[in-house]
Image 1 (cartoon, rainbow, N blue to C red):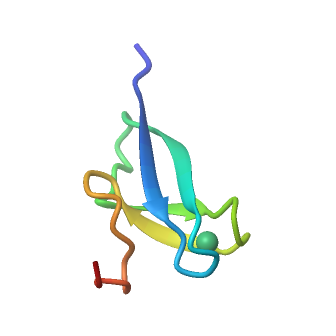
Image 2: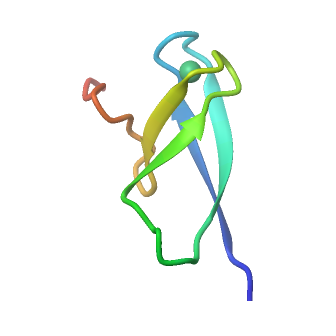
Length: 59
Ligand SMILES: [Zn+2]
């Protein structure tokens, strides 16, 4: 059984909304998912449920 989840977040560098597909199973499930940003190419840590970025807590 494979379950995938799409999280979307706003890239703080390019201000673009990026969607990222993550695996929802496995034991390495983390609250903040490290993703390589498609917009700026850097690594962001995105909250799996809220899409908020670690270290960018403004709304
Ligand atoms: Zn980015």
